Length: 445
Image (tube, rainbow, N blue to C red):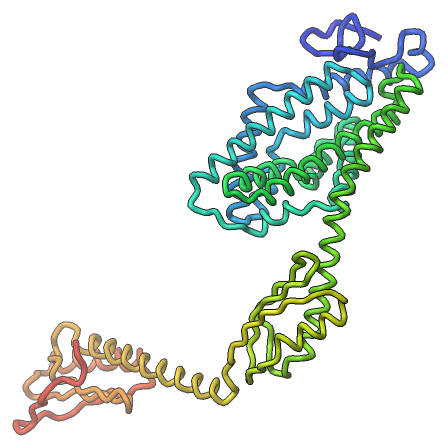
């Protein structure tokens, strides 16, 4: 089952060879297994080998993915970080490593490792440069989430690797999108760069462990699924035993720190639940917790936070420490800041005062608008408009005989228009005699 397919690796006069063992059965066995299956496996391996190449396209995509992931982590934007996962090309060399281990193709393994190492180095350098020039260097939740990998992350990566191999074999590009999102590869590298630039080595080590976990789990899952689908059929039982021992041993060693991290998180969750329960019993009915931080430090529980209380409790820290210590059987350090909150009566008084101030401000605004509306066109002088904001009353001092019929009609229309715009106010005419001269305007222009 050969043919002339120039320019496509693995197709031509010879079956696919990535630099080592044959990827398909020999011609004598092809008839037993089926030539179409052998050709399909050659096509899949050729595709995997192409995706594992280190070329300009790979470098460009890893640069863009690292930049997007770093900016998303600094902004704590989950959507942006997901976008970086979709752009990342690292799944190619990782799958190449998995298929190379399945078929023991040394050339494919070397190619994948070189491409993966180059991608890691470029991603870390790009992320470090962005973090170095960025004015934002705060630890965001998105950054912190990638510093404590657990056995759960290992499980996600294994399942994701299985789904990825299935997508490659069935040519399901949509599945690969989900695998790329589920198995984060570039964000941990950006977190490593953050730890190196800011001197947070715990962040760098934790993110490195997460990246290593995802990479090995995906690669090993690809190896297992590939072998189950008859890739590397010429391998002996000894080869299979070596693969099984290697995979189990590597995952076993990797599981130790992941299990310890998971145990630490479980302990923190248990400690937090205990603290919340005991603190709720010590606080009064109307008291509430504003913030609470519970962590494990040197096998001791450290608690700090802020509570809003009606009445200060001098023994709150010691009582909480005693109760939590008795419940968890370990040392407890408590530092709770108590802030006096307003009583209901004080809150009502403040609310009434705010309403009055708002009403006064509204009347002042209405006064200015009414004055501007009445004096438009300067038919009514400003000193002829008398405004009582408290009573919401406006008096326009007029001499209708001196105004004349046309001017008086125009002023009437202006007053009617302003009155319609402010129905809660009373705008009326006032007679102006020789003895009446307003001393000063009621409202400033």
